[in-house]
Length: 210
Image 1 (cartoon, rainbow, N blue to C red):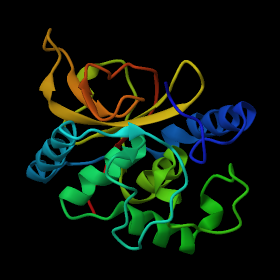
Image 2: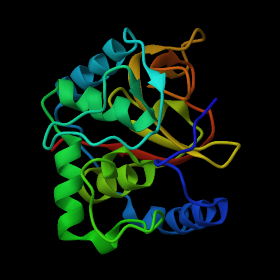
Image 3: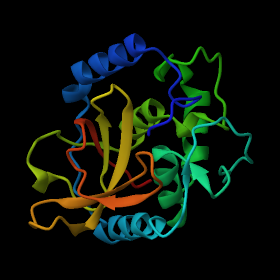
């Protein structure tokens, strides 16, 4: 079961308003990407698959963590933590990236949690914040029902049927029918490798290499 805590403790009205506004502006944010370093994205995808070897309890609780390169205890986490951990394996600290960007342009990030300023303990663990960061610092790619446009190393964000937001990493292995790359994500049972590209309504498609 997907937990609701500090990471998603905002009303369904606020959440739906964010998604509606986000999708209304999405096409204007599209940025073409030459994907010049496929090796990086394959490494990132491999780091994601490696995460499926770990036992993680789905737990969205607020935890004070070091900064930079901080992480919640290894045995706990949510969907965003798997993105952060995969990137950390390839030498990129999303905790620091999100925090430093929020310090510069806090007004650009969603006001969904009654925050008055950045918090390096939690900001990078919230799906809407990662979506904004990836929009600002990465490539915003088209959303489509064609599975071929989602490539290893891409990040996908969804709105689930229950209204919660979710995020995962596209990896190299494919579905049994060969039509889709699999997804590494934590949707409640720890990091899993699954045929989950269309687990919900896709609301974001990103590629990020600093």
